[in-house]
Length: 400
Image 1 (tube, rainbow, N blue to C red):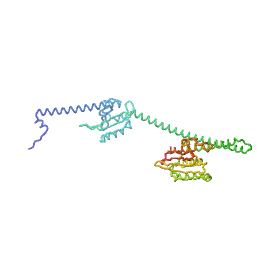
Image 2: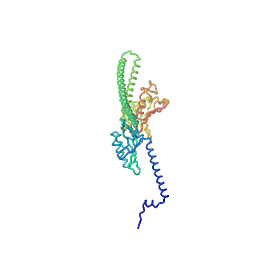
Image 3: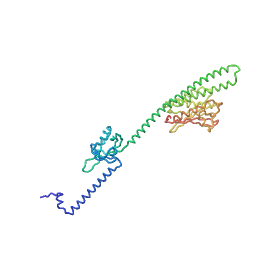
């Protein structure tokens, strides 16, 4: 025959001393639990952030002082009410999703919503929600709210300022582009009008020189007019290149050189100039820019070899991993390297204008073109031992 053993039977059988010890242990556990509960309640109430405890339906079970202040009423009024009553209508759906995720055990959830206080003030808040579980009680949502209204206002103001600045920059860019186009037209039109005036002056001088006993100074006037026409032509070309609308593509530099030499073919034949060239690469850039650069360099070489009995021009090529270097070498009068930078300045000259024609704009134009595409231009030479004018072109040019 068996006998059931139950706690009641054990208590009847236990001695008074044993019962006393057990009661003391239970009392200590109760006090410990009460202390922990009081501590948790104090932490909740005195939390530096706005905190609420909610049911799965969003009903407020408890709220601390900061939470009540944020919602614009007292804790006693809030307890038992639905938080939805304090949410702006467009925020209710997103908040319901947050609650559902928390009670589904999806971990910590964050979002943003707008609170509508009883006084009508609308607040932007960031929320953080976690599941809060206590033994013997239904799960609750611990919700922390942070007022980010000032941050949102500042963000919107900053965004509005940025948009206004972007619009202003766009307007300024359009105005600047219009001014550039206007300036270009003024320069080109002025050059055309000046060219017409100089043509008439030159025609008058031609007629005057055909008369007997014409003054000797008319010859000097004619030369001055011709130089002025050359300067106007160079200025027009400089402005055209300054506003060149580049078309980037692979360009066979050998073909460009052949076109340049064809343009000066009569001069090469008459003077017996020997021209040689290394195999030239295909460069990525604008064909018109290469045409101008090689034309200026070849024309420069022919000009400064005019006094040579056997003029020679050689086109050289160097290459490294980043760029190609193309040089036009001659055996002409050369120049002093202390003046090497002057050649590429606007109206810069290395030799007297009375000895060699030119406006001093050609090499400045070359440097401007090279720098526009990330390249370089420079010269090397020695007096009476010739010169080499180089331009370096990047293998991956970027128009500036």
